[in-house]
Image (cartoon, rainbow, N blue to C red; front, top):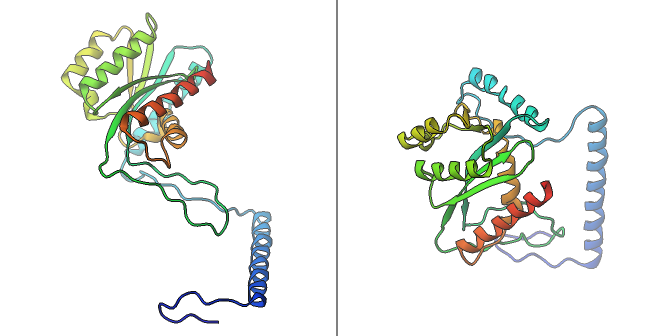
Length: 240
């Protein structure tokens, strides 16, 4: 039976429905068998990923990969190595895939009338996995310095190697003066531009947002921040 133009979906007789279901099952079976043959032939279904190749300095990127060795050394009890970054948490909820019954309507997530955001500054200890954080309204040199003070308080009298990106607010005059003043305790390793894949904390941000900030509209920005903070506390308990 064929629908024309904007006609409603036609009613199918019971026999038609049975045939349709059988046909669908046959297609699924054939696709499964075909996929198995492709897998045996050495092929697999993969999801493409975005790349910054062509925008970044590939020589500098390859050189910066050596910073990964610092992380491995930290895991064996070496110096305190911190992967640092900032991320934005928006009241407008990010979406992530969820399980749903086949044939059910696509899940919907409400959105706010006006978006709001808060910035989370973080430092991931590459040896212990613990996270040092500082919340701020914006990304700025002053808020970055505030985070660095929190970090230094968390590791008193310990040598810290900080791996971070070259964001412009990381290089304000006040920031450079602060880093110079604390150079005996804090050494910064600057990542080249367009190299987020070299910063370990990026994976922590993705996991945190997926588990505590996605697919739900919070009543307020403070409620969102509280839930993300709960996720941070859970992370710290797991690695304690």
